[in-house]
Image (cartoon, rainbow, N blue to C red; front, side, top):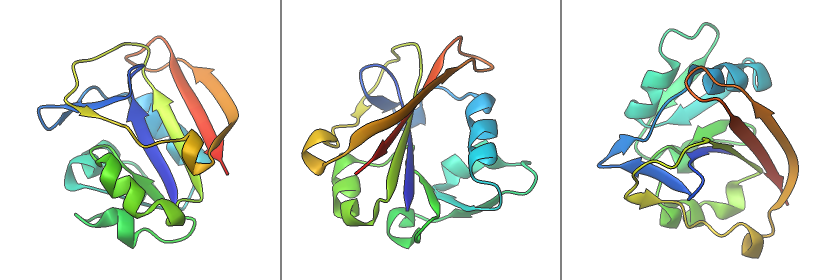
Length: 140
């Protein structure tokens, strides 16, 4: 699977079971990168893709284990432990970083370096609600 996460500069993911922020430019970017691909995530994450033409989204509480090879798992609210459980299945990792630190009580502590991940591409673009969003692509 290709794992996608949204993090703030301090690796914050969520606060009080809610996403920190959203930006439609990131969803547009994912649609451009993966046309016709299947996206997986939670019911909350599915709302980000509502009304997006040509997007297949499968919501499941166990989406990290069900996403197959080449499919995209959007891990908006996944714990680091859940990510470690499926580490061997992750083909590529894409992190979208917001340009602002938000309150967070869910922090991503998934270890990139010890798991052999290397930053292979980085792109900065303007969002619809953020001046700067950084896309980081990691491969092993």
